Amino acid sequence: MTHKPIRKAIFPVGGQGTRFLPATKAVPKEMLPVVDRPLLQYAVDEALAAGIEQMIFVTARGKAALEEYFDVAGELVASLKAKGKAAELAVLDTTQLTPGRIAYVRQQEPAGLGHAVWCARLITGDEPFAVLLPDELLWNPAAPALKEMVGVYEQRGGNVISVLEVPEAHTSRYGIVRPGTVDGLVTEVLGLVEKPAAGTAPSRLAAIGRYILQPEVMTALAAHKRGAGGEIQLTDAMAEMIGVQPFHALTFTGVRHDCGDKAGFITANVALALERADVGPAVREYLATL
Ligand code: G1P
Image (cartoon, rainbow, N blue to C red; front, side, top):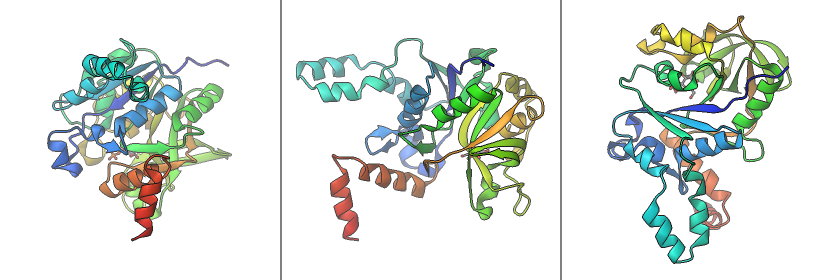
């Protein structure tokens, strides 16, 4: 059976980034660098690797730097060309998508992740789409998370989310899966609960910020029902699709860095720096002195 291709991806980037104040007073959280690339670039690269054609950024006030970043910097390009700086020019390639491949929508109130996704409904229309939360840096260059999920989607259709087993004590921080049949890394999803109270989680399988969803989820989101924390939750709308459409979870096998958290952001920088030929040796040498 062939399923409609996943051509569009939503990136909710309207958050205020209060955990990174004062830096985020003037710089969007998504623009903070992991080594030398903004956090958001990793999610965009992952989407490109999965064959996504159109990126939809759900932004908010104070996020203008994102538009500058993904635009063509004419003067910079001209001066790099004049100086023959080919390597630097190549680095800019993935930041300059061709016109029309990026769309911006404003989320006018911070009403939750479900609300942010719903803000993009007129652009996704009647197509299935991906959602990537850039805070979650899912590092697996050999098998990027969303690409693997598209593989599962092509076989099974419906909805596919990325999950990881988390410690029991952390289940109340995530959307948690009630698992059904397990087939290797793919688990059937029988239920979803957003941030279950301690001791009530149906499993330790947590959603880690990557989703392939059918357009009907937008109809569920349109009801604007408030869930955990008084917010419009994507998890609640997804839960309404279970039993109506196929719904599977794919366990992520790479390294997950939770960059929404300061410690996670710093460890992401260390881990990715160590993999780099240019800065890796110096960082390793310093760490060895500690
Ligand atoms: C969001 C989702 C949650 C998911 C998490 C992954 O929560 O609501 O289901 O498990 O992202 O990072 P947030 O971290 O925005 O509270």
